[in-house]
Image (cartoon, rainbow, N blue to C red; front, side, top):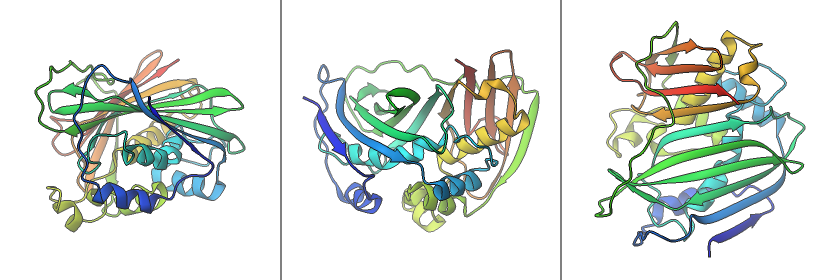
Length: 294
């Protein structure tokens, strides 16, 4: 039977991080069990206007009345940690890599909305580099599903299980772009985003802490990159109805070292927008993605 967790308030992040850093768990992974290992629910959550404004500023969103489509991910992040440090998750949290993310916005969130947030930890599936699993987040307002996110993460480990093929959620990154937007990713963006999101993974904070994990410099948060891409794309066409109800898929490919100069390449079609984020080495994208109307 899957683990069920009911919360009355968002859990404190620092104790969860301590458990993530100190846990040394690893259980045998077996197939054919529960499809959902654990679920956590948080009801009647108000949106903090000051926190939302800080998020808008650090990610580059303007002062629109609606809530950025990437913001609920930040609200759900403590719930994700709660699941990952639970006994239901068989791997150490350190070293888990975010490889894909998909957000579906069924309607725009408003600051006045009160949210019910539900997160599910999916069972791991064997892939070439280890095991992949999904964190599925759903946000409801008055019983209506308004937002859904799927974060696919990879736990690297040796195994002898048959592997499944994985279809990336994003399209290929070598499309013919019609427009490019250049920006400088500052050296302190990891610390600035960490203060807003609560994601204080050492690989994002300082070069010294990132080197412990094999990086030459700190790297940008993947979800900050995704949010900043969305902010830049919305700014090019603020009245585009594509950004009202849409599915926003990204595949994370190559880390962005801090600081860096990057280019957002994008092309618009009738009912979708395709994009990729490249750096000085344009042969390989840092991420690629797609926004499509629903």
